[in-house]
Image (cartoon, rainbow, N blue to C red; front, side, top):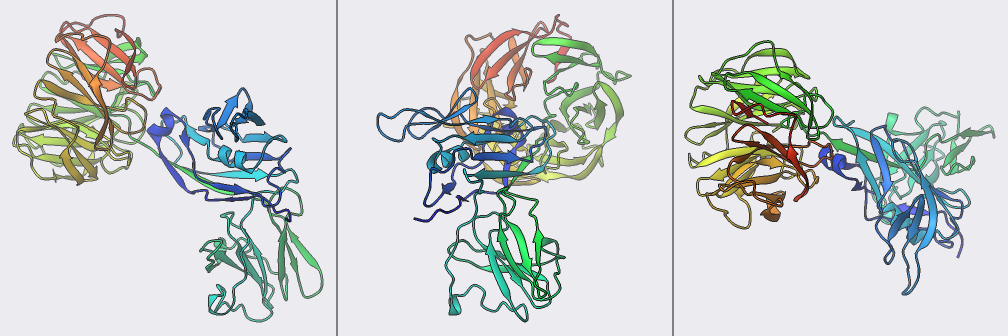
Length: 578
């Protein structure tokens, strides 16, 4: 069988990840591709796989899948491939370097072959270290064999008559076609020369076995602007040995024009959907949660935290608004990735402090009107996915309402959803389905939990969740992403003090049970969740009746550490807000 260049197909692009998911753990880029090299599937000694175009916040790595049958493994800087026959051993197929903000390079040895390289591509992962990630980047995946040829598209047989995918194409006189995979999507595109010397580009918008061609013009034509005079005659080949196709164009006078391809490989667009994390206070912008307090006299204070240790303790703001004003929540209202504070007065009026760290840059009442004392601010969340926090309210009759916010300005203020009645209370917000938009968590008077999945002000799902109703002795205390999957989970506490976690996947409970090595008792109250150790997984914040704060650092439903937070007890007059 004749030797052919390697072929990679099935690579999905673009791929989109949620910020919290790729902050917490590496995510597979594409677990289902096809990689072949007809005629010589083992011709890769000295060849490479590279992923280029990474930003400093990006990491592309190789999942250590294991050493079992046909699995990719990592041993030091070596890449291994599990046995392919019963009783066989693990084989080193190459070594890797880079990938952490720089080009990932895998250099193959003589043991590399197509099935192993296919498995390697399917185990490439992406992670992002930024709390304000760049929305999109274009990476380039390139695989070259021992001869230096890069993976290219599949050739297809010419068709005639009504089955001709070029039927109806007419560039004028002296059409001179050439076929090549110019966009790296695994099928052949067409470039057609014409008598006027320009080049027409027809992208194959079908597939390798069912071609359909669409002419691209202007900037969408990679050969736009090239004019060789008369009778352009293009052909494509890798003339500089860099693994991509260059262009050679003949013309009427007999000369040959050479155009080097300065791009290469398969374009892989990776998008990261930012998630508004500021509902959990982080005043120091170190990606670790801090603790917000309010005293009985109204004074606001912050403890800047590094794990369970406080690095700074002090009041926030230049004045005390007094005991008639109550801190209701935190959020990022101006999209600067810094926590702000939402207040509500006894009259019902809402106010906002925009913060830069612990410095107040704006303090004032917000909203188009005062809804009155029968309405309570229940929480904040980013309901429309604009990266800025919004406010969720509930009236005494049970009605839910929302203010969509742009800084201190409300762009929408009105009720949302049907009124479930006063026996249902909003208990918090969280992104349960991982769409980058906050949802609403409810609990009925009988203990039943329910979720409204939200798309802006519209509820796309309304219903009870969970395998059972834990009863009225269990209270929902909030939400947090305990397992780092980018989706909100639910934290509960029993009247006797026992904590429990429901790990959620949308509206489905994947795990439900008590957590912790002991019950701290009814004098300890869960006041919120936050990521205090910076591992992108939620931890539990407690306060005792005597004022003492404590933190349980968590890894999923497992407690990693338990201890008092900070260096002193501020006393029972100070209340943990979040």
